[in-house]
Length: 103
Image (cartoon, rainbow, N blue to C red):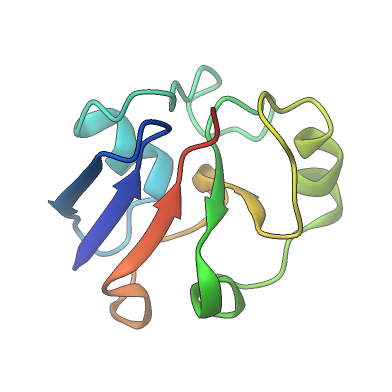
C-alpha cells in the first residue's frame, strides 16, 4: 500500500508500506523527518504525532482514551485530525493515506 507523508516544508515522501505494520514503524523505516517513535510504538510518548488528512481520518479507527492523553504531550499543534501514527495499522483500506507531519 502507498502512504504519503507531507513534511513541514511541504515536501512529500511517498512510500510502499507493508500491510500489518503501524505507520510509525513505516515512517522510521523510510527516515521520515519529525517522526522518531522513541517508545517503539508502546504508546508511551508522542514522538510519532501526525495529522491525518481529510477523509482518511475516519478510516483510521477511533482514537483511544490513552492515545488522547498522550497527544497532550505532542510537539506541534494538536488538532481533531491528530493521531499517533503508532496506533494506525497499514491496511488495504488505507492505501493512499496522507499524513501531515506537524512542524
